[in-house]
Length: 371
Ligand code: IPM
Ligand code: MG
Image 1 (cartoon, rainbow, N blue to C red):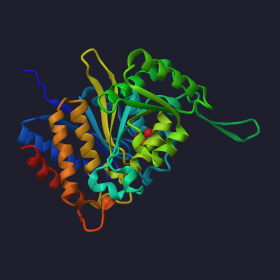
Image 2 (image 1 turned 60 degrees about the horizontal axis):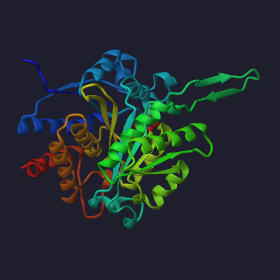
Image 3 (image 1 turned 180 degrees about the horizontal axis):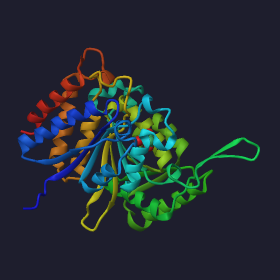
Image 4 (image 1 turned 90 degrees about the horizontal axis):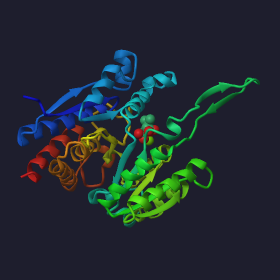
């Protein structure tokens, strides 16, 4: 009989990656025992961990595995240990290769403020309370991958660093469609951010996004904003936004900013999706927005909720297990409402707990909400 268990590849990576991934495995075990959902879980190395073991941030074997599974779940990559390596060998290149070779062009970064944590934001409560926005970042194009690129030495001995911002119509169209589709399931509004006032690629971006809207999504409200203004509006009045669609570099920056509005980077998940094949199947990688946090790695202090919420996104977008995704998200709310906090989201009069205690509490809540 064919084995149609869902296949997951876990890539814990570096720093706090491995310890937060342990808590995802706890959730996977729970689904296995209580829901009879059996996953085929394999594990691999990425980033510094792979450099130490194999001399490269991602082996061809792991790359091939990533292409063969239903979804990849990644912890975090990077750390001071590998800072001095040449650019092409850095841990981050492993992540960038996964994105590029899997053609994960659509990066979904929700920024949601949980009621229990609204006070933890550096912004005023009335500015962020109830915030729920989705940043859709283009992930395989733009200045991250554009050619020409490099550092050259000029005849006078000085040096020149070059990167190229480049977008073709089809790259803009497909990311715009992802944004419009998502908006239809939310509040039906998209804001597109670029720098059409200084960059030709921004002019094209604006025109193509507008065209997709007019031809295919006339029911969705579309506005355009310069990316710098968007950065400003995000702290001035973030709730004006529903879905923000933007390029790779602006998306990198705006999503960090949006993450901070929520009070903790340790809470935010993300999904990176490829195009759908004829069966509607998309390659996909899920990862927390936070990094490897080398300063607290190995101390049991890391917040496992972002990677657990990334797994919930995986259930929702790749595995069609919406009920289980809802249950995990509800369990996260419940542990927060119950007063448990890891160090990064600690508040007065709350109970500070370790990574493991947070994970165990989450599974207990899962038992309650899933009943
Ligand atoms: C992110 C990160 C990455 C990026 C790094 C680690 C390469 O900042 O996912 O936002 O710049 O895309
Ligand atoms: Mg970033």
